[in-house]
Amino acid sequence: MKNEKIDLGLTGYDELFMSGEEREDRKKPKVEEIFISDLRPFKDHPFRVKEDEEMEQLKKSIHESGVLVPALARPTEDGYELISGHRRMAACAALGLESMPVIVRPMNDEEAVIAMVDSNLQREHLLPSEKAFAYKMKMEAMKAQGKRTDLTSSQLATKLDAASEIGKSAGESRDQVFRYIRLTNLIPEILKMVDEGRIALTPAVELSYLQMFEQNALYRIMERDEVTPSVYQAKLMRQLSREEKLNDAAIEKLISEPKANQKEYVRVPCEQLRRYFPQNATPKQMQETLLRAMDFYRQHSRADKERVAR
Image 1 (tube, rainbow, N blue to C red):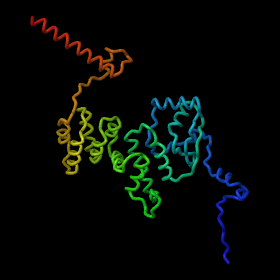
Image 2: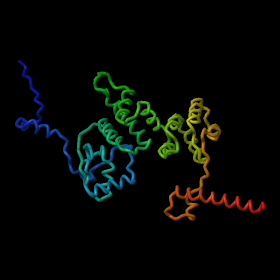
Image 3: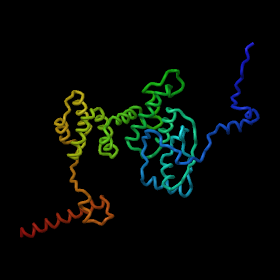
Image 4: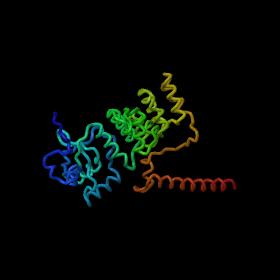
């Protein structure tokens, strides 16, 4: 009769004499104090670590109370790859700390990407470009992982399943996830304009279908003339691109047409106005002062004309 091994789920003889609570405690992730010099940023990490007010608040918190939430990393041949906690690591390094608390957990590439994206999508302020590349990385990881996102079906995950799951975790619709992923097809210069709010998401998605040389031509014209396309203009450009008729002349003609509800601006560089204002004056304060000055000028001009007429 063939001997059969009974798997009790134990990893060593010492576990035979452990209580259930002790076994469960052993399985829990442990927090380790890891040298910052041994931590490596996640490869192609799409989220920026910015020196802004939030970073200053984080530094202050760590200085006063330490790192309250451990980072997450996976072991590598030469140290550890950081999954989440890039801002905490940057803050610790800026404060001169040599180590920080980290949960070390073995993960394959796909698991690491998904964990990295999910942990960062909870941040309040994310740029469109950050969402775009994060969604794309998670989409590719889920497809490579080769499993359903609902885990109740034996079928493999489809592209639409992955997009729906990403949307659920990020509070976005499936279609919105695809829109953001389209932004990864924009040249860096135009994508930066999207991040700066100079181009809205919908026209940016339309522009993402243009060829690279067409996008470069469009960017040169936008910067030169200080204009951006409307949704309608962007759709026409996409259509002309598909027909291989989108050249510099066509772009100039399209983008020069007035847009609905378009506002006209008089742009004066702040550097030219600084000599008339205190050094700490904000652009908004300068604008308000200029408008009051123009009202004053108009009133006095009208009074001068009336005096001459008498």
